[in-house]
Image (tube, rainbow, N blue to C red; front, top):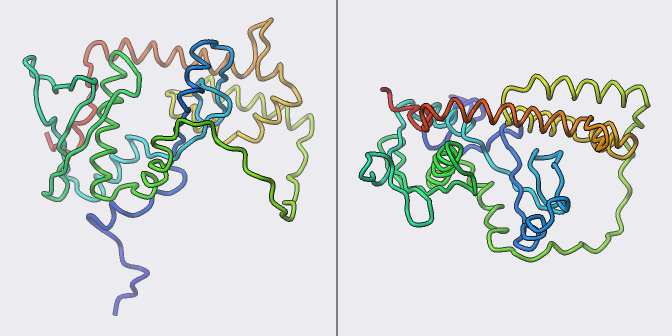
Length: 270
């Protein structure tokens, strides 16, 4: 008799398996008021050490699975999976609706379900990639992929109110984390700087920020100019912004030759 605990999940059962924590990214979910406040005054926002984006400091973050992690799971569940736009425009490219969104058909294990994606406010070639990735996540959810994360996100879907401050609870204080010495702080800042300078894409930068969150917060408090020195234009924040600009410039140049950049064709077997 086969031990059920050792059985390997396949197909739709595998697709519904929760994603490991290292494959889950953070998506900022600002309220309308927070978005408008930062639009009116750019300085009201900050470069987030959790997601790497610039937004209001009190934004709530939701868990989501990126395009690469989802593609990997789809390939494991069905190497023949594929997607196609629901409609084509006169130019032969996927048709967009009046809101700039795109409907797709995702086929997994010979079953086809619809999905919808938009560009999340992005423009140019990056908007096309964002639209495809968003549509794939939406369609894959119909098969059960990352359904637990979607359920959490839906709870915040129409929340345009400022998050309420929870009332303090009488709890046993958690043990304090070991104090970071000045030497550790200096070494940590140098390590993060080197990692940021060598990052090849924004997803890697997000991982660096996530993995070094505690150290970054300590630097902000104890050595704020190591994080950002406005007068000299030095620090980890300017280093990160400069690297992101370099990455985006490279992506814009590469994608201007082919807007699709190979996205969305994985699994077609062509």
